Image (cartoon, rainbow, N blue to C red; front, side, top):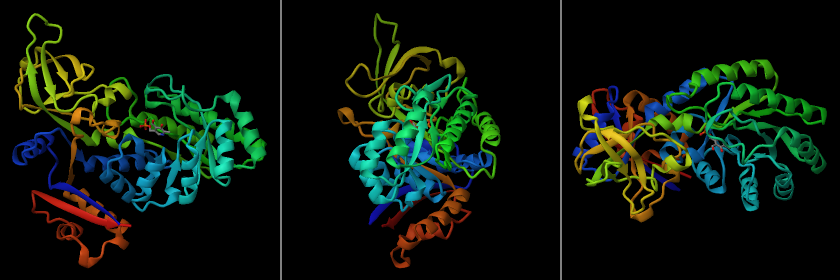
Amino acid sequence: MLLRDFKIQLFNEDFNIKKILEEIIHIQGQEDAFYVVDIDDLVKKHKNWCDKLPRVQPFYAVKCNDTQAMLEILAALGVGFDCASKAEIQKVKSLGVSSDRIIYANPCKTNSYIRYAASQGVTCMTFDNATELYKIKQNFPSAELVLRIRCDAKEAQCPLGSKFGAIPSAVPELLTVARELGLNLIGVSFHVGSGCADVTAYSNAISSAKEVFTMAAHMGFQFRLLDLGGGYPGHHNHGFPTFDQLADSINDALDEHFPRGCGVRIIAEPGRYYVSSAFTLATCVIAKREVLNDTSQGTMYYTNDGVYGSFNCLLYDHAAVQMKSLKEYQEKDWCMPSSIWGPTCDSLDCILKRVLMPSMDVGDWLYWPNMGAYTCSAASTFNGFPRPEFHYVASEFTWSYLADLLAVCFHEDVEASSVDEDLAACLKLPSPSATLRILSIETTTT
Ligand code: PLP
């Protein structure tokens, strides 16, 4: 049995992120960096996905942010999961998610992980090379295989094509090997690049996938799955296409190459789309250094999360972060040349090398919106600095909706007599008169 325990603050009005931060910092006495996680945002994203891409079933890419509560909520919403490793499969399975809602979407897998997937009934997995086909033949010959092809966006925040994806000239040989080995190929996947900056990328990729479907049909395969991978934006980003623009182009390409009724199931592996905007990181100014005779760095501020923690996204995800101050300042005050540093003893640990900002003091708070993607999932505790805690917030409306879903999801495991009082209150739906309450939710599952 697993015990889940997370706290959710419920609001009966629209959130005001600054008010929430103030309450956590000043009333709850927070000093370490922390995240505020907006559950409404996550639920809205899912609804938007279903509205804009009604033919495409999302399989959330766990690597992007594997926070337990987020995974539970996504599971309750009926989202599938893209797992890249044994541990990710274990984590998703531990939520009670059935194996057919998991795709093992790593084209280069460890032998024993393939056997583990087989033992768990996770049958669907990707490949992009012949060596992988021989490994799968040995470890899980009845697996349902999805050929990942290379279809790079002209521009992406994190291109992936140099590492994964079969180029067109390699495809006939891979299909031939698969046929000779008697393997069960069921479809095609691609990933145009994470943080896609090219509005034509998906339509080009869907058209290429169709060519592979046709080639495979000539060789006797009956493909039935198309996997559109990830790459969708998680928040508004200047110079990047919007989700709506990408969705329009995907829908048009699907209508052309995989029309309704064609018998092909369409899935995708969105990561950042779901989680980016739901997470706001708050960090405290822990030290300040005026560097005499050196104006290049301006005033140096040290804050309690850095590139070894959440801001690893600056290195690995090539992210651009946005800094805000919790204290109100006039526009004219944002004029002091400054630099923002993480808390570790490494000089690489710099968040912003040069920024104009107001003069701040030790104990002042900064906050950073859109920090949900490829941040906490890759953060370390280097130098002993803890990973930020999570503070979940939801509107009463959204929570009551979710509480019903979660109750259904964990129905077998929640016995009336053992239900925590707060959970019981929560399942009965929160009273509309409450303005702010903290519920401790404990759920047991197998
Ligand atoms: N699927 C695979 C195989 C990936 O490698 C990734 C990210 O690296 C994703 C999905 C998620 O991509 P994104 O966060 O851009 O949606």
